[in-house]
Length: 313
Image (cartoon, rainbow, N blue to C red; front, side, top):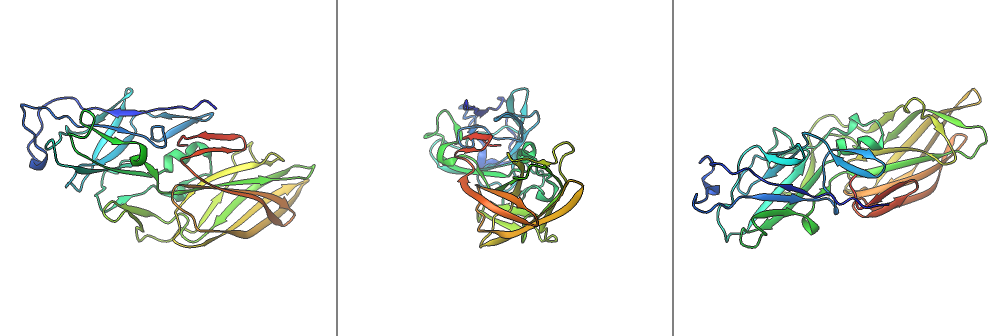
């Protein structure tokens, strides 16, 4: 697969900076414009559309960026193939090393200690929507003097990282008479409970809303057939602090008869930034796990017909 290397360089227009934040004022006689570059495993990040295995930015995508000593983020918006900040930012001085933090997607009401993460319960299990629910964070330390032209770089070891876990379920059928999926249920403790991210503690915590312990999906019309090649679904889930048991149940029909198959054999400690792929075979009332894989979401991966070469999907 041809690897797509997309970098986002975020630059700021030059105009007079307001004096609201004195800690980041700079001498007008020396312009120390703050710029950014960011990536996720060698590719740029954003809410994405999927065309084959290539990711593309969408117009009006936004990330949130925390300046040092400020608890509210500045948004950067992707507009006409460039990134524009909501306000002008300058380095406060040349020598001091500062820590900068950022996250995707931008949240208007976010503060450094509480950035609300996307609502996972709204997923429909489609690969094309993974980017819509993804949540990523990045942090780096630098001074103007050690930076390259004032660039705050969220790349390399300081690149953005996924804070959710991704599960891919592949259902296969070995019978000559094809089965058609009618419903898909995946249960697990707090798999989709609303969470927030704290940049001070670098921890994920519950928002305190009702627990969401189940995904209940209907197949896309025209894509119900469980073929020998497999029927796929992708879901982002909250990482777990310990082993989490998943209860997977599907309802399907074959030759005019309805069936239900189930397994509780998926037990795993789910880590942020990991991709968990489970291949299961329908056997009457049972779902038999025939293969399982765990990989870093951000590494080179080849999973069946889906190829990911260091790209966020």
